[in-house]
Every structure is written in C-alpha cells, then in structure tokens.
Image 1 (cartoon, rainbow, N blue to C red):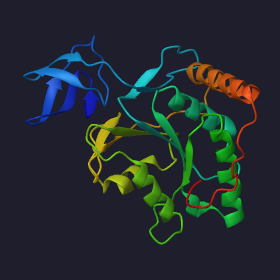
Image 2 (image 1 turned 60 degrees about the horizontal axis):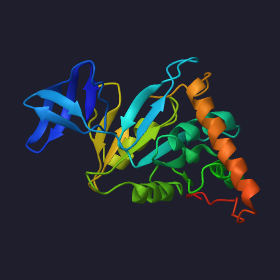
Image 3 (image 1 turned 180 degrees about the vertical axis):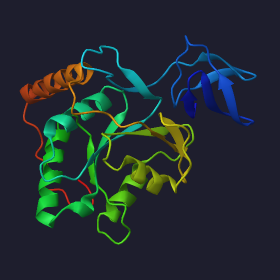
Length: 252
C-alpha cells in the first residue's frame, strides 16, 4: 500500500501501480500488504510492525501511521534546549512498533558551535540508552556542511530491498519533508497522509504526518512507562557496559 485516501488506496501490484478500493472495515495504511481482486482489496495481510501515535490525550488505541516497517527514524530538529520529554515519547512509540528505532537530529547546521552540537547529541545518546541498540545520527541537508556526512550515514542504514521499509516520524517543522526529499531524490508523494516513497537503493520510506509530540499523549506515556521499567530491570540485572557519550557531529 503506497497511500490511503478514504476508501481509495494506492497499491504496487506485480503488473504496476493500481488504485484499489477497500471496505471501511479493513482500514489499510501505508506499508500494508494486501490481497487484490481486480481493483478491490479483499484482505489485509498480518502486519509485522505498526507505527502509531495518539489522536488525543485520552486516545487509548491510537492511529496507525505505517505498517510493516523495519526501521523507524525518530526525527528532532536541533535546538539548544531540546525537550527530553518529547524525544522520549517519540522514542517510546517507535520502540513499541516492533521495528528498530534511530534517533535523528536534523538541521545540525543551525548549531552555533561544535560544542553546542556535541552537547545536544550527547543528551540524545543518553536518552537512547532506554532502548538498547538505538543509534543517534546528526544530519544536515546542506551539501557543504559537515553534517552532510551524517545524512550519508543515515542513508546507509536504510533498507535496500523493496520488501523492507523504514518510516520517519517527528513533530511538524523538524525537517522531515526536506530529509525525505534528500534521501529519496525528490520522489513524489501522494496526498497529505502517510505515503510510501521509493528510495534509490531499492527500499522504501514511509513519510508520515507531523506528530503533535508536545501535547498529552496517553498512548506514548503508556509505552514510555514500559520502556523505563525495562531499563530499570536491566540496571538491576548487573553493571552495564560503559559507552561514549560525546558523539561526533556525523552521529553516535
């Protein structure tokens, strides 16, 4: 599934792109695999992962943004006073998806100094410890900026097979669209909701709408409490290996 507009869905079939119709009970999203009969979606195949966020403070089920992704890019724009709570909530939602999260600090060209950038990246590296294996990458889409090396490193992490996908999530204004354009070579996207964007290496990237991460989010808080509980259990289990907390501008 490439995009969903009401009951009409964009699909990539063996014969090429198809506009298909889904019944309201199916509720497909970008990234879904489906069985088609002509231009009708018969069923949605079981999902291996789901990326979701809350649609309100009391929403306990959440809205699915993308399905069947292997990697979730959690994007935040550089700020000298980056809000840890917002990043933690987005990381918790990504970790709960059953995909691998990556913390991406965009617009690092806005950093007033190398020291300021290293400080923010170090803070993100500490937050990433709540979800073992989470990488931290600082990027810039300005070709001549040193942060462009981080964009190349991020591109190397993306899937290279059409059967694999990544999703990018983050608040409005964090540079998601600019980053997706840079990674995909400006591939066109359909509609204003989540959309599947082909990558030059053969994989696909699901571009999602901006998440209002500063608002109360019951779903994110629930996942975050589980993430923190798991982290406490790891601490109780024994000493943790020391790690470098001063990542370079290109990533951690």
